[in-house]
Image (cartoon, rainbow, N blue to C red):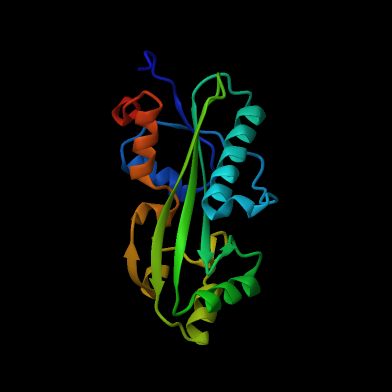
Length: 202
């Protein structure tokens, strides 16, 4: 077991991830990574791809902010539909196209987590998978949703925690995973690192 409690450091710009940590009672610092690069090959499969992206974000934050200690948490969320990885839309037209593909289908939301000790660079990687069933959306509904601006910056071009939930028929798995940070998985990873989640509570 670890004997000293390090700081928990969130390597993310996501307000949704910050809010999930706050709601769970965590005390943490925010040190966003300078990269959001998706240039990796998904050869390892969607889960491994998301884990690798999360790890790159964690390392990028450690190096950019000169972190010498702390437990650095990074995450990356993607959507997988019929073997194809879908990330964030590039623009409104891309968002409409993505939502058109997801309409009336079942897809997987995958979030990779990386928990990295900034001092030793010891890392723990894992991912969570949630199955989401979307109802069929009309072109008018898609246009209106995209025009509202909510689709941009979200994996799969929708936000379950905002108004995108009206398009969802069924969810199997972690709800917080769909939002962007699977809290159940995070707790297991913290314990595996030798700490207790309550060690980081406010």
